[in-house]
Length: 188
Image 1 (tube, one colour):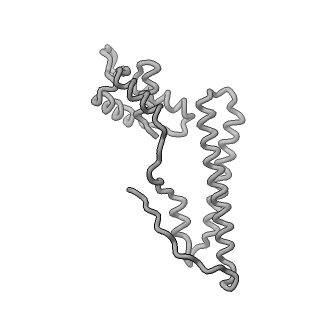
Image 2: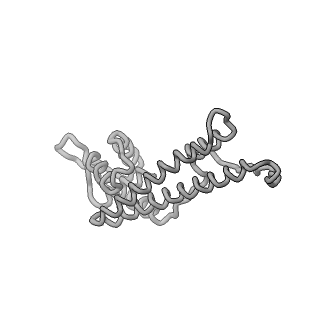
Image 3: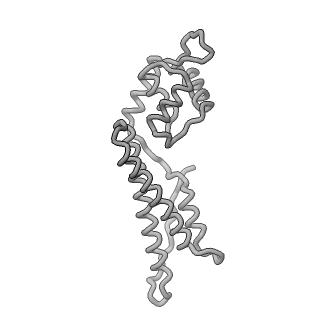
């Protein structure tokens, strides 16, 4: 998530104070991604240093920020450039399952079930938010749809893990010979 680009997008709509920007961001994202006000001001200082925003002279103690033409150009570039993921992010759940396998002190199936239950509950929460939130703006609905699809994918993946775990726990005489794993190169 690009906090800097999000702040630029909000400033493109109108000049604002840091606290107002944080509140607008959290309102637009339904509080799913809370922002620390310190993070907002640190990011605004970087954007100011880079010539994308400036502080307006103000009698108030708070700093009023506005977008500069360079900031508008940078924001347009961001919107026009497709988002790419070079290397997959580390996923704590995937690591948990990988490291749970082969342990004698726990059953990986129990880990899968606990995670699946939590994922289904989260999916239900998101679905309820969407069903109850018809008055929300289109951006909020885009965010909820994204979260729902991610939760659905997580549940499907956990189902597949459970199925694969069950298949591999068959008696050795019924198993196919395993092939060596290919190494996946992940950039850090």
